[in-house]
Length: 115
Image 1 (cartoon, rainbow, N blue to C red):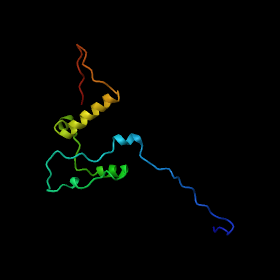
Image 2: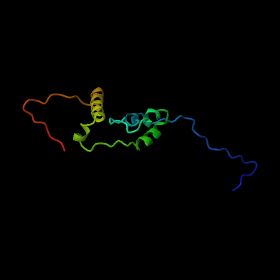
Image 3: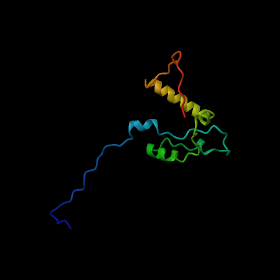
Image 4: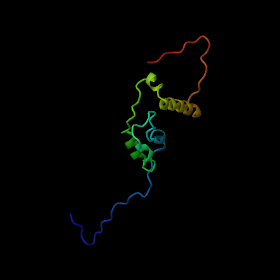
């Protein structure tokens, strides 16, 4: 339908609020960690390109293309310095947030196993 000259169509109001990612996502989105292996090229791309200026959602998208693979077991993870560092950081974060604390096993108790 066509509006008559006396009817003026007003466009819908758009929010002027600046959007930003949830604070909860900041712990989980990060650029890929550098590889521990020696570079296979003379001039590795990560020495010249930075993703820090990109919005968080694009950083997350780009990290999904990382060539690093995640270990599928603890025995694989413990062989990689990056994963050892990540595990230590996670334990420190749990302790800093008072999520848990590491204590000695009570005398006479046997620790449980895991898969």
